[in-house]
Amino acid sequence: MLKKVYASAVFGVEASTITVEVNVDTGIGYHLVGLPDNAIKESNFRIAAALQNNGYKIPGKKIIINMSPADLRKEGSAYDLTLAIGILVATNQIKAENIEEYLIMGELSLDGNLQPIKGALPIAVKAREEGFKGFILPKQNAKEAAIVDGLKVYGVDNIAQVINYFDKDKPLEQTIINTREEFNKSLNFPEFDFSDVKGQESIKRCMEIAAAGGHNIILIGPPGAGKTMLAKRLPSILPPMTLHEALETTKIHSVVGRVKAHTGLMAQRPFRSPHHTISNVALVGGGSYPQPGEISLSHNGVLFLDELPEFKREVLEVMRQPLEDREVTIARAKFTVTYPSSFMLVASMNPSPGGYFNDPNAPVTSSPAEMQRYLSKISGPLLDRIDIHIEVTPVPFEKLSDERKGESSVDIRKRVTAARERQTKRFEESNSVHYNAQMNTKQIRAHCKLDDASMQLLKTAMERLNLSARAYDRILKVSRTIADLEASESINGSHLSEAIQYRSMDREGWLG
Image 1: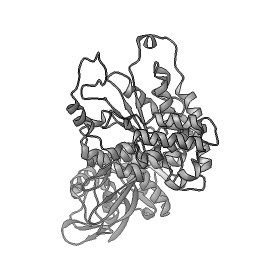
Image 2: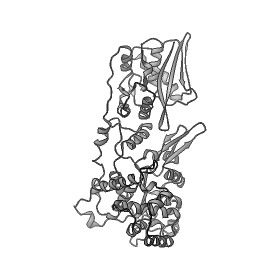
Image 3: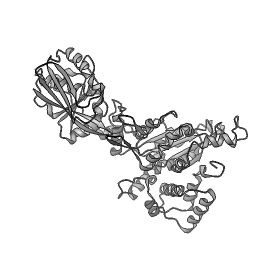
């Protein structure tokens, strides 16, 4: 007897439906075909134990299971439940009239309980597209899958519930989520708030500009100046994610199994801070079965690289293309996967190996050769892709001991959101550009027009600081954002001179 049960496989951030065909014939043997990996090949032991512990068994017959399409690599333990139910139906141990209307997935424990799976959200999206009536999966993933409306999602604890649903018509509890309500729950209560930061007004201003235009930023300063503290608070002033962005971000985190069971939809922008020993595959994604890297996990959020020169040079160099294209493509012999990676890069570094630069009272000093070796780890092309360079100085004691609270993140976010709304309006006809940092050369020429005096000011700065053509574009983008924060239609000299200030690493004495 032949029976078909349906599951799904995730490639990149998209899912493909897998048809599991179970054929039972006379003879003895258990044959699993269709390019399964080792985790799936081992599933027969888990299935046998789970069925036995729930009053069923794998009969001593010839069972052939094909996972179609047979030329597509299947991996992971999420097919256990699919295979187990398929075997029970094909061997007439249970009846299931409408099993082809459901997508069934889950990893089995030996007692029949279900363990969570990866990629529940993209799988649910695909199930709705293909017209499935329901999706049966482990309870821990139910909230994540229930974000998709128009699909009945049933979270189950063990295989017995699934058997009783099909065989004895015992109803399963449907998981229903009000997506908008979930989304709005945690918007106004940031974990880290700018009101905790004492002093550093100029740096806060820089952070506000970076957030308003989506600009990459590097903070340069001695140890203890507050670089990490400021970086951690950046997501709290970014505009709230749109529902589309939240879905896109949750999808990527779902693929690697990072969505918390009680949340479902990710409403807060991600903040990723990888250690400097990270490999280039872990940063951009890849592996023999490609997985998203840190740059994709920080999509629509912030990627913070603390102590930038400590990262291996080749690791930083692989980031150049994703910074420009806002997506990363991983090519393999048989397939190509593209992950979105539109993130804000925030980097921090000490100005010298000892941590102190041009400070006569410094406890540690570095020789010019050591300085050069330290700074040469960061290439010019990578620095060119960072719009704002700002020096962070230590906070004086008077400011540290001041009891007054600074401006809160919620207040700064209002100004940032207003500036972003102006940009959204400006780029409403473009599908790929949503804020100033994404502008291409043509859009810069259209939206960053300068009067004669401003043009002369920029020409002088370019010649004195010996800036590249890319740095010229960066200055125009940042000055456009400063004008947006002031609700100004045109860029004037003060906007431009403030933007030029934020190219400190291009000045003489840094990377000379």
